[in-house]
Structures are given as C-alpha cells and as structure tokens.
Amino acid sequence: MTHNNTKAERTGFGSKIGIILATAGSAVGLGNVWRFPYMTGENGGAAFLLVYIACILLLGLPGMISEFIVGRRAQANAARAYDNLSGERPWRFVGYLGIFTATIILGFYAVVAGWCLQYLYASLLGHVQGSADYAQTYFQQFASHPVKPVMWALAFIIITHMVVVRGVRKGIERASKFLMPILLILLVILVIASCSLPNAWKGVEFLFKPDFSKLNSHVFLEALGQAFFSLSLGTACLCTYASYFKRDTNLLGSAAQISVLDTLIAILSGLMIFPAAASVGINPDSGPSLIFITLPNVFQQAFGAIPVVEYVVSIMFYALLVFAALTSTISMHEIGTAFFTEEMHMKRRNASFVITLTASCISVFCAWSVGAWDSLKIMGLSLMDFCDRLTANILLPLGGMLTCIFVGWFIPRKIVFEEFTNQGSINANLFLLFVFTVRYICPIGIVLVFLHQLGII
Ligand code: PFF
Image 1 (cartoon, rainbow, N blue to C red):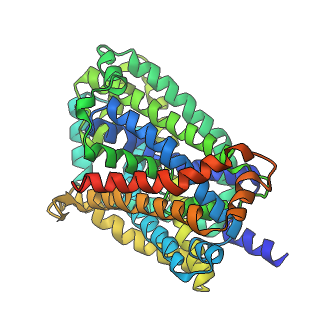
Image 2 (tube, rainbow, N blue to C red):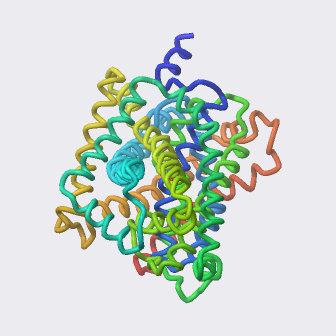
Image 3 (cartoon, helix red, strand yellow):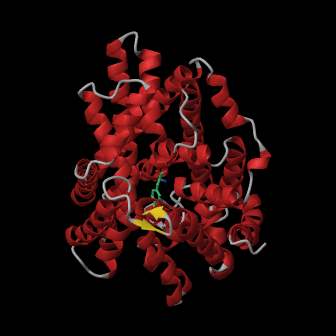
C-alpha cells in the first residue's frame, strides 16, 4: 500500500495505457519534427536515413528494451535502479549520467520549444505567412532578439514545471490519446501539400535516393545520436518511466510500437520539409532554422488561396508541435525530479525547482548563443549546438551502451529472462537473440562508431 502511494506521488500516472502513451509522448517530439529533418539535410539525405534506420533497429530497439528491463524490475528512480539490480554502487553512475544529460537537453530543447511557442503566437496574430525570404528574415530577427527567445524558452520551462509539480499529467496523457493521432493526420495532410508543390520531386529524391558517397564517419555518429535522441534513449528516461509499467506490459512489443511510430513521424516530417524546401529554393542544410523557414511557405503555397484554412492549419500545427514538445520536456524533467525527491529526500516541489532552475540557466545562455550573443562559442560551436552535440552524439550513446552492457553482462540472466518474456509467457524464442544483441552488437557497434569518428579506425 505504502509502495503504491509512493508510486502515485512520484508521477501521478493514471493507468497502464497512460504510461505507455507517456513513453511514446516522450519519444515523439521536436526530435522528430525539427531535429530529424535538419540532421538529414546536413548529412546528405537518403544515405543518412538508411544509417539512421539501421541504428534504430540494431542499437535503439535493444537499448530501449534494456532500459525498460532495468526500470520495471527495479521500480525506482534512475540512480537507484542500477544500484538495486547490481548491488554495486558504481553502476549508479549510469543513472547520474542520465540525469545530467536529460537536464542539459531540457535546457536547449526548451529554446526550440520556445521558438514553436513564438510561432504559435505569431500565427494566431496572422504574422507568419510569407515568401521564403520573408520567412528567413522573420526567423533571424526573432532568434537574434535579446529578450524574446529567452522569454519563450523560460515560459516553456515554467509550463513543464507546473505539469510536473501539479500532477496535471493525467489530463496530458488523456489528451495525447487524441492529440497524437491528430498530429499524425495533420502531418499526412502537410506531406501531401508539400509533395504537390512545383519541383517537389527533388526533395523526395533527396530523402529517398541514397548517394553513398555522402557517407563518412561523421554521418554515422550523427545518425546514431539522432536515433538515441529521438527514442529518448540513454538518459534513463525510459528506465524511469518503465518503473511504472505493469507486470504484464510486453516490453518488446511496446518498444517496437514506439520505435515504429517514432520513425514514421520522423520520415513524414522529412517528407513535409524537403519537397517544400526544394520547391521554394531553401537549402536542405540550412541547420536548426530549417523547419521554421520552410513551413510558412508550405502553409502559404498550399492553402494560401483560402486564407482561413491557412490560418487554421498553421495554428493547429504549431499547437500540436508545442504539445509534442511538452510531453518530451515533462519526461526530461521527471528524471531529475524523481531522483532528487527519492534520493535526496526533498519535497517534490523543491526537487522540481532545482531542475527548473538549472535548465533555465542553460536555456538562457543557449538562446543567446544562437542570436544576440553569437560569440558565445565552445570548440567552434554555439553553446546551443555544443550542448546538442555533446548530449546526442556522446552522452546518449554512452548511456545507452552502458545500459546494454549492464543488462547483457551484469544483471543475472534469470532476471533478464523474466522481464523480457514476462515470466516465460511471451517472446521466449527471441530471448537469445536479444541477449546476443545487447552483449555484443550494441556495445561493439557504438564503440566502433566512436572510434571511427575519432579517426582511430
Ligand atoms: N525524444 C525526444 C524527441 O524526439 O523530441 C527528445 C528527448 C526526450 C530526449 C527525453 C531525451 C529524453 F530523455
């Protein structure tokens, strides 16, 4: 009884379907709609997409199941989960690493989520319609403003904070039950609109016709990072959420469904952006601003003939994007909040405050580093890009790899079997394949990508 109460306090998750939706909500977000198109654009298109899908299948899916196993078995926050299952304190470090990584991601992710809030607000006022040139100037002026991007980013973190502290999460989960399908339908409509623009086929070709000469070690690392970022893998976020899963949740089935949904939304986002970008002459490698400078053109060219439709579609799209981002930021926030509440014995409200304050500081500097204060650079990258690459390309794969090693080599095989097969009742024939993958394929694959990037092999 006490245990159940603690669980309810920890998250306020409503039901079995609620927690699976929340996990899918964590995975689907700006990583799919904003980061995937810009990464694909910067890394040569279709060849990147192929490597990305390989990373999801070979490394992401087994990594996700591994985090689920650790979380559901241990039923505790990230740090305690690793500790509980191994009985060896050094494994706590993986949990700490996850909390650290998630808080940095929350910091820069909120900046982009803030951009979405600004675009939602501007579309409500009818301000973001316009030509490619106008869209580019609009974005630049907004992003380099010393106050506005900071204000929106902080607003986003505060909204996240309120959801995490107040436990209005049940409502959010219920809402995602119908908002996620609406996002999917709207994406399909925008894909059709984008693909019917003049010269759109060039963009479709860019996304689906691989040019293998574009493959190099950096592309592998970026695809690996994108796969982990998009699946929310390597921050112990999935482990934290899985600690609320039911005993009969099919871990393999849930991981497969979430990965398919996540990849589908990423590909649809690519199909929404590249044909439109090709049609209006925006470079696919325009970087983080890509969707913000391309989308207004899609809205205008496809629906401009009936202004009210253009108005409604743009508002709906940015509102859904904000919602998708929120379900992801809640998950990043929850990792640290659960940790400080349970391990440091802080009140949930105070624990949340620590995360909110830390993420807000990161956000402010990240927002300035891509605008008003663009001399704020680390290793030649803006602070925002630095935080993005540090987490996606290094910390997430590292966290995911350690989890695979932990599950493959350190947790007793019997426990892994019980969790993977729900006490022998399902998926038993895939068990050995899973163990082989997490023992060898995942760690070796990730180490090879790291070494290749460092030029060692
Ligand atoms: N997977 C999220 C997205 O694609 O937007 C981003 C994310 C969420 C990364 C939670 C890491 C995390 F812990």
